[in-house]
Amino acid sequence: MTSALLPTYARAPLAFERGEGAWLVAESGERYLDFGAGIAVNALGHAHPHLVEALTSQAQKLWHTSNLFQIPEGERLGQRLVDASFADVAFFCNSGAEANEAAIKIARKYHAAAGQPERYRIVTFEGAFHGRTLATLAAGGQQKYIEGFGPKVDGFDQVPFGDHEALLAAIGPETAALMIEPIQGEGGIRSVPPQCLRGLRALCDERGLLLIMDEVQTGVGRTGQLFAHEWAGMAPDILSAAKGIGGGFPLGVCLATREAARGMTAGSHGTTFGGNPLAMAVGNAVLDVVLAEGFLDHVQRIGLVLKQRLAGLKDRYPDIFEDVRGAGLLIGLKLRVPNTDFVAAARAEHLLLIPAGDNVARLLPPLIVTEAEVGAAIERLEAAASRFASGMRRAAE
Ligand SMILES: *Cc1c(COP(=O)(O)O)cnc(C)c1O
Image (cartoon, rainbow, N blue to C red; front, side, top):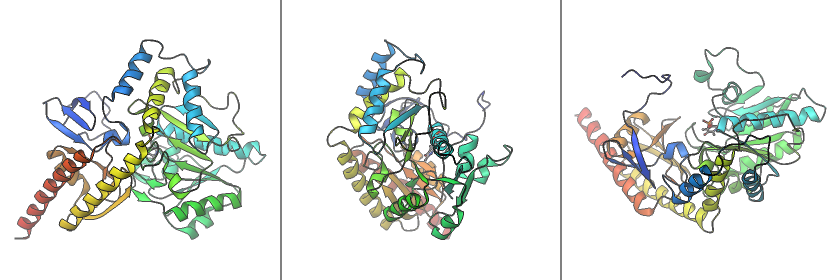
């Protein structure tokens, strides 16, 4: 099929017409159980009444004014995020990559403002994904994404995941910050152990470095805390969030302590669209739900149920599944068969999953998913696995 769209995606031959909660309805009328949630974006599922109400009532009043004026809904959302986190200030933008760009700029400016402009380098970790802008690609360090786009943006030093010696060796007099995902998302749901996150915090304090946490995928309740680093009982200096924060409306945020952001003054950074009244209305509505009493407990509880049911499935199909990992409703199924084939097999059972690195299929259901829907997903995974297993038996005969 020819398409007028730049062919940067290998899209499944499937389009959806509407959605409701954890379900998507295709143009054909077929219903799919959505355990991808638009790559962890539809945190509250599809057509959540509170979000629909917030969006439509704001749409009738005011969409956009620019950041040249006060935006009360933005002040309110910023204050709520600050009150609920380690941070003192928030910068709103439209995506994860932009939130990371802001984080990188804040970290570099911190040292420049302290009279050390030579401290601009940022240490990142192999398998990371920080976005598709030129700087965030350099931060992520994945050769296949960087190649062919000219000189790599300077200022990023990457070390192997979990290699303490290499990390220490990479820190020099030019290092400004460390940047890390508490759980690598695109990299295959690889968690940084809590004691390592605390170790990174101590290391940064000792060397005068800033710690940047990329919570674009792990944030906004995905792991059962507002932010995943909270599980480790530590805090970064700068944090980026996006995906779930707008529940499907393009929204990102960079949070920082006042100290880390001290180099940022009027004119030092900006965005035309970021934090506009429409986005802020939806962002506040998402937080209304995520911060409501008991909501994160629900995510934790249902996440445990999902993980236990997946562990049972793995035991029944040891030739298909190798490992179940992740936290809350950010779950990775490491496969022994090609992950993209398995994702296609699940789709044939009307269950949507998302492939990730390290041969993982991700389960990222909307945070409002019910236990019955988890049961339905397990049945569909079982059907996909059993088809794979019988194919493998036939091939062996
Ligand atoms: C998705 C993602 C990004 C990039 O977000 P975009 O909105 O696509 O720019 C950055 N970091 C992490 C951890 C992500 O999962």
